Amino acid sequence: MKKLLVISGTATGLTLLLLVPSFAQQQTGSAPAKQATKDLRTTREIKVISSAGARALADACTVWAEQNKQTVAIAILDWGGNLIESHAMEGAPMNAIDTALLKAKSALRWRRATSETNKLVRSGENLAPTFMRDFPQPGALPIMVNGQVIGAMGVSGADGEKCAQAAIDAVFGQSTSSGR
Image (tube, rainbow, N blue to C red):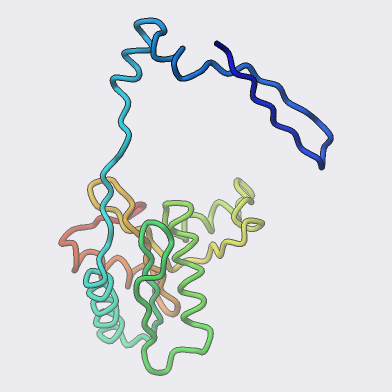
């Protein structure tokens, strides 16, 4: 039995008709279809940065900044882009947290250091970040553990990516971010 799926859009005035096999047909279908259903993974495991892990990253970055006589602001996001931790050192400019947050979002979206995204934009190779409301300025890194992005860390002021990398190395015990 085939089901008729009608999708229409009032803005375009178009109607799209698709013949979609019913679920019962898919189940009684060929052997390859049964094998594909058998191999289907309905869930996956993801790593999530904890609040304690995010706080440890902020603390480690602050220590690095103090040792290097720099003033920074820090924003740490989880894999879904939710702000987990933010911190501004005394003397950080008023817009520093916002800048760190924008950088972290850009690193998370593009899954690379914002300095790399900045080079792509400047060379004209990829201009998408400029019209996607990203902030491809150096200072943020995605946080990767075992090849999986678990978040991003944006740092505003001074050597942001060096500060972020030092924090990631200190907390996770090894270089886990991409592009470094």
